[in-house]
Figure 1: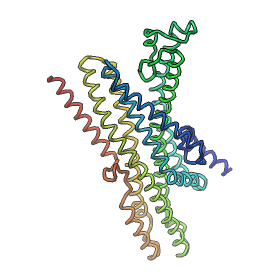
Figure 2 (figure 1 turned 180 degrees about the vertical axis):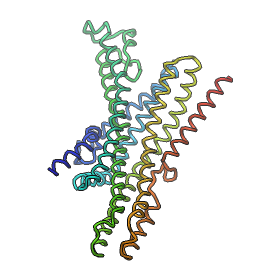
Figure 3 (figure 1 turned 180 degrees about the horizontal axis):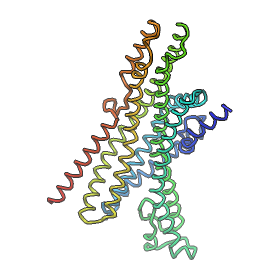
Figure 4 (figure 1 turned 90 degrees about the vertical axis):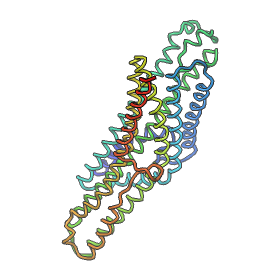
Length: 402
């Protein structure tokens, strides 16, 4: 019965992330072989190809309006972030694989009911973020793909099976990336449409999928830190002789060291990812702000709503990382409070001395940093929100005056 329970728990907690990351070759519990490498190469090359031809489209497309340039720039940014994220995860595969193996062991050997409830609470949070973020990202790209395929279906030339199209027919086709098909062959344009549709799906999977995958990993770590705090707060319960207490304390110290090492590996993985994320999101906020102000000036309410939604998506994506950084630092600090709330004064003096070292180490929390100097927490998120609001206000004043 217990074996069936932990199997169902692991399936519940990890299966969504497996289905998401396996197609792009970054599922960490798989055997790393040539097929995994091929999937990873496909994901990076697909994003790189999209970035390349959209960049050329911006540079050489005559008469491109501001909205088209912004849409292409957003896709270029997302494609670049996708390449960075899945590449960094693959470079840190050994460290993250070690963490995933420990996570599987945590589900296998969880014994107490309250510990399992803590793990399920964090797993539910990870699943909620997973489904909400991925559904939102796929909902955004599905209309683009459907509109492009519909343009093929509604073409009059499809009624007569031909292999060539006129210039006017060619311009009727709307590709998912809002481009004009560069070829005059129907089959070629349909093939480009399918390739771009697959690229958009891979883009959403690689970009948002990497975010929710790392979020789920961090949430499990926070759950283990909370469980360690519960164990330390009840350390005095059921004590026997001094040797028993010493053995139990050593096991908890080793667990604390293991969790801190795993946290360090995760922080190192997130360092470059967050640096790139902040740089590109800062540029996107500036461009979306410009689009928002221009849309207000010309009373284009569709673009106003679209700009607000785009800004909201960026803020939600940033909020996930700041939330993880906040919870991780709080959980590492809470270890000291948990020990203090235990009946340490009833323990032998030699065990009390060791407890002091644990409390001293817990006073230095683990922070998720950008470039190893800028903390990612809720204060950072509030600072970015204030800076964005100030930027929008300055832009609005400039457009009002000029």
